[in-house]
Length: 74
Image (cartoon, helix red, strand yellow):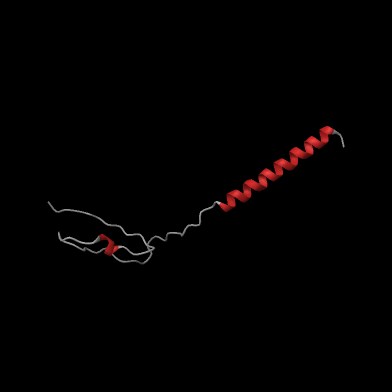
């Protein structure tokens, strides 16, 4: 095997190793997310105050989204 063939072989091995490393890195950095199901059952809309002080933390549920809407009747 001459020097030119050795260089080509080394380059081919490096390219393959780089591609394998890239695929492994890409797979290991994928985020694991929980799918959101639209319309999934949950607590319905609820008015929790008509001007009184409230604790927002008391309305939060671990592991679930909580949407809080503030409004005023002028």
